[in-house]
Length: 586
Image 1 (cartoon, helix red, strand yellow):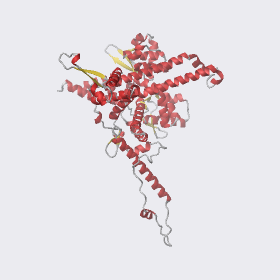
Image 2: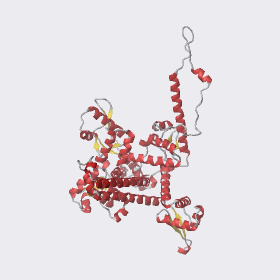
Image 3: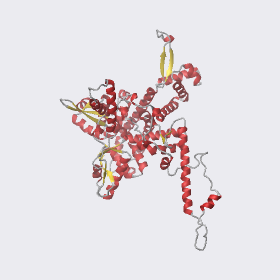
Image 4: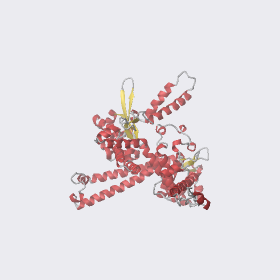
């Protein structure tokens, strides 16, 4: 389904999401998703009218989209009737976008084919219970079933799979409004509180209730197995893949690369291990309170961020998560040195055993010496890790902050803000040139800037500075603000200054990158359509694995060219996605 140029520019994210859904679920699913993104919530009848599909086709397609978390459902009840509305849900489209990376990450993390297969099946099938999975697995071997149950327990414990309820399929905004109305209705109308205070009190109660609903955790999730007396996941509860858990990993990857760029490769490995130590319990990448549209007054200042106890760590926790082949020795030049054993220590360590005939020859306790060496080695490693953590703490960019009792934590609000600025500066520098990045930093640091100040601070000639500033204005990196000097606001007496609107510039870059991702997806789709005959031939059962025997030399050349061009497009999409996700989620 080739989107029109106006539709592409109107909603770049719709352009990307519909392209992804079309490649996985077909054109009808892509059309319905596009209509839901454009018009918002719609009933099945309205969807049928706007998409020009029959009601039965719409309902069949909606089942697949709901199962893959691409559409959410809300039932609105009135005195006369009950209407079911459908919304587009972003989680499913993100799972499709990152499906390859998700499978690769789980395989790397667990190094287990069975676990990877479970995650792959959940990504392709949507929501499943363990009983459903085991019945489709088709094995009666108790040992295999027990092993699969252990794998499910690991995925649920690590929060890759989460239990779902009816509210999982509801849109968050409608769920919030319902929760708020109930909380507001509980406050007695006879109270002396003003309307403003009543709303504030209702909002405080509703926020707590809403977060409980979002973080749904059934009491019967973990049960005891009667035969083995061990804990296992309830096989009757439906589970779904948690895309938020994977986005935490993406956040850690971005912060690790940022640390590598600013501090160094070795310290970035330490930082990556620190992030892995607390990844499971860190705050969600997408805050549900942001999604329901609460104002900025509802959130704490970034500098006032305080982590939970489960998000703190020390040097010992980091050491556990370091790669086994990583060598710490020599990474800190002025680090701690191992104390040499003195002669008195050597003499005191050797013991003599008294026998009936007298004293025996002193024993050489080799095991004690080896244990001491291992302990000294671990102590030295801990000291080196501690030095790296201090480097991260004392850096101009607050990668880490120190808590009490020698614990550390990652100040996500602060460091992610600096990450966005760094990525934006890098994009400007690589596309428009280093002088443009210099002008941008000058304007950002000084807020409102005149041309004269840019010339002097950025060390550029007036002619060059003017042309580069015009380029930045063209790409929405800088905005022009008019400051009148007279009451009649005459243009001849006004001064024009430059300013940097961070949110506006970031959103423009995000939309631009997203549009390019959609273009690449469309090119790959067109490429497959142009070579549809060849693709149909190689997908035949009698040809699979025997392409060299059944394909002509010209077809083999065409197939190689097709794969190379498709691989080139996928690589470009992955590079653009790594930029887009910084401004989309962080």
